[in-house]
Length: 360
Image (cartoon, rainbow, N blue to C red):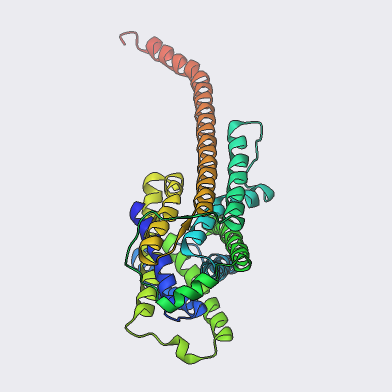
């Protein structure tokens, strides 16, 4: 999972470099899902071709389309636009709001219980409020600049650094924050739909391939409507090709396989605990390679979001332990009832056999 989060941090840096090179963000997202569809479809064909699977119904196809929309086309375009207006570190910090937004959605849809009288319920509410408070600090408080180290490795072009600096005004920062929050809502919606889709179609590679194929169609149509200059679609042997290959094959391909393997080995809670590492890696890479400056507001807001995330994870773990104890207690009582009900019958059988054959 450390490798997975480090690779995800690389995605943010490649995004910024490709955009700095002049690549259209919508075209970038479209190419990402085209590459991802080719990779994931091949994996699904190789690894799941012999498995018996349910028929692909219209409902499963609709859920795949919606997953591609909220988890791919809409979520990624909102996230990248937010990153352009702010910075990779800021966007990565705001992405930690996704568990809190998902929790709010799950409460309204009846998928989660609040249980405010329990410690777990109090921790979930506290974690949600801390996450929202951290996002507000990130948005409206910048604070003094913090220089952790100085480096001469600046991959961004000098002329675009001034443009990037001019985009750090409060108006663009607020707009970028709103887009980041909207992307969190989009991803939270995707998680809800993906959970429902997994019940009907429990095949990781095939469902991911269906999602990526839907996202590729949606992003290509959207990009073609917004970008009519065909020269923007050209890929050469440059940072643009490297970015779409990295994000498509590695992030949407290898990362899915690696994460699914970790989920099977240690469970989803173990995997989600490593999410805040993305913020740390992006902040380090961002300041080292892109010469982005850290500010006190970003650090305070990021810490609040991470604390809120871990409070929610602790609450979820306590709920899982409580359910496991109840399930174990229920099974024990059922076993006792079965033993009590069958014991006399066994004694009668033994007595009857002994009477029939006294030598035994």
